[in-house]
Image (cartoon, rainbow, N blue to C red; front, top):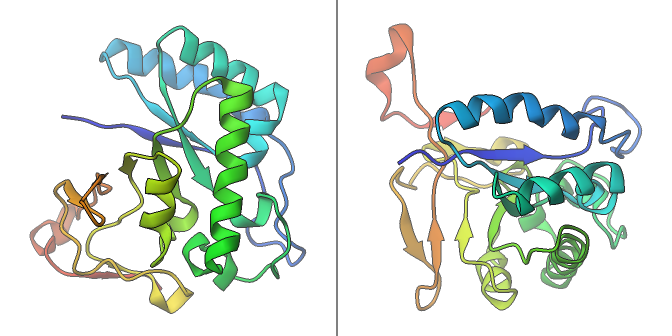
Length: 207
């Protein structure tokens, strides 16, 4: 089974010294080019939307029409620096949703979920944390808000050197997690090519 998840987010300058703020969502409509490829192979992608995309008519009206036509699924993609309430300091550590205080992470996802439901017309059930940044409280928040699937895990990858999570012990196959468990994790597919193709079981450490 092939699952295609598209991070559908605002354009921003990641390397800029100033705070990371959305500078546009014009790229969203360019997804129609990719959709022609998806249609050719009978792939129905999931677009996970950040707050600027889900709250800007130029972007969400296009995605709403796609969803109504049956061409895609819709999920949520929490990028803290562009998602209200905007109360935290803009730092690398705070760019991972799971590093935020519980109430702040929850409220940001509440507002994102509401924005998607209101403007796109669908209650999202699929979640991908911005920068793969799940934390200790994330699972509980997802269950509370009715999410069923998470796609944030990057198996074999350690992001702690950049304040992110450590996924080195997470397996690559889907699995259930949470208290009951009630959530399905579908990890990202990663791998090595070329001369490193035989080293696929080694942890990947982000530099």
